[in-house]
Length: 220
Image (tube, one colour):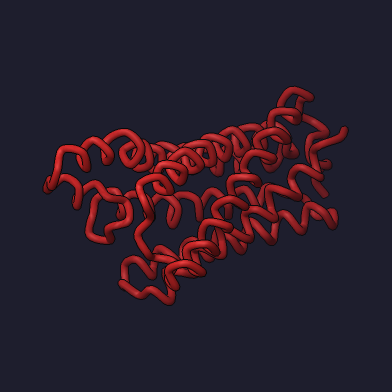
């Protein structure tokens, strides 16, 4: 049996950073889930267009969420048992690609799209709108959260031990990773029913996993 998490390579600094990143990631995931619920109640659809103000708030939350997940996964790679570190490091690498891919998309929504709107109709608006299923940013966003987050979550899940709490984190991350890959298949197949599975992975399963990470690492 491998050594307990954090017993050999972990540091107190990495632990504190992970806990804070996990708290931020949990808050962002809950805000994301509330945003989905609000959109469903108000518009009757998860895919309805948002107002410019809501879109800007979504962009800020997404940027913070992306960065917090990257910090979380990198910190985790310093805290797992030595024999599982390669798995956590691979998870951190995939989370870095996710962060870069998704953050570019949401920065465009925050900094570029309002300027295009003020300038009037522009062909670039359709190409850069992350809500437009025919746009480049839409494809990049769902590639990031479908493929790269899915793989990051699966490798991170494999890095955990077998205590009851760690098993809970393991299964939540594994389920989130698998559903993210299913979501990606839904994008390719243009199936909304399959695509919507991803929202469960990120809004519900990921928020539960990061909350349990806070519990697991908040004390020595």
